[in-house]
Image (cartoon, rainbow, N blue to C red):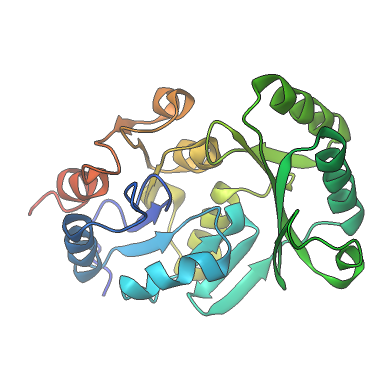
Length: 253
């Protein structure tokens, strides 16, 4: 039951480095406060760069029945098991990004509806067979990562973010967590972006924390995110989400 007295009606949560601690777990304290928010009528929405299969177990753990955003906004779920919208990459773009990975000899991953692929299970025949959602690189060398970024920017038509300082994550241009959460608000819940609290730690959270009514950076967030957030909370290992729910959403608790 939605509470009309609540200033914020949707809590959009990144997963890695935000909802999950460094052991990739939801702490009991954070889980307790998420349940309090749900009981008060707040929609709790996972908003993650992970694919559906990597995210759903945590949604199930929290008992979520609300919409979910996966693959940095390329997939929007009406409920955690019911797809509402999917934005696909053209296979020729995936081929170009894969060619860059081979040329630079860097680790890559490619999300498709059919599965997640990397150097260990890649086959060129997959390009025509699969429906592609997201592409990414993990590059420790700053110079090489910059070179790859320049090539991607020259391609155009790409939304380029990261989920850690050594990653590059690529979606179709205009597709990000903000576009996903906006679709959830406008099409599925009938609420405004000003009624959203968005929490994250990496550049793939930047668009949504800028668009939300309250944009929150975790204490462990990248500096760019902290500079653009309305609030910086405690780290993912110190129940930063619980503090936000207590101090900004359920202010009468």
